[in-house]
Amino acid sequence: MVRMIALIRINSLVDFEYYRTKVSATLKPYRGEIRFRAKKIVTLVDENELEDFSQIALFSFPSQEDMDDWHASDAYSNVKELRASAGSFIILSLNPN
Image 1 (cartoon, rainbow, N blue to C red):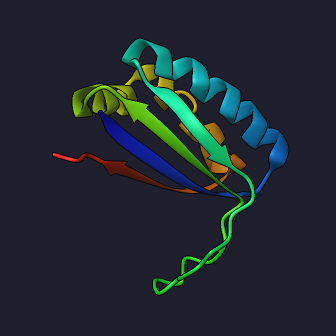
Image 2 (tube, helix red, strand yellow):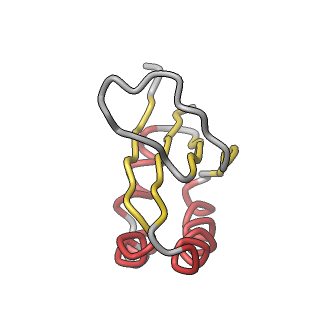
């Protein structure tokens, strides 16, 4: 199982909510799922000066290949423009292997 974390600064709540619904639909063919979302975030240490985020989301996929295929998919590519108007994102892949 691999995980993906999205650190999000929302620019447009309307665009972000729409993006969020679109992303959920793109995950299913790749057996990905959103494990949780956090709206209330407390930064304990910020040595890289990333500053505060509006939301954090944790995703899981059965394998790195599933995650990579999802990220390269046409379905997800079609919502990337919407992502850009919704906010700024840092997306990290976490593979325990």
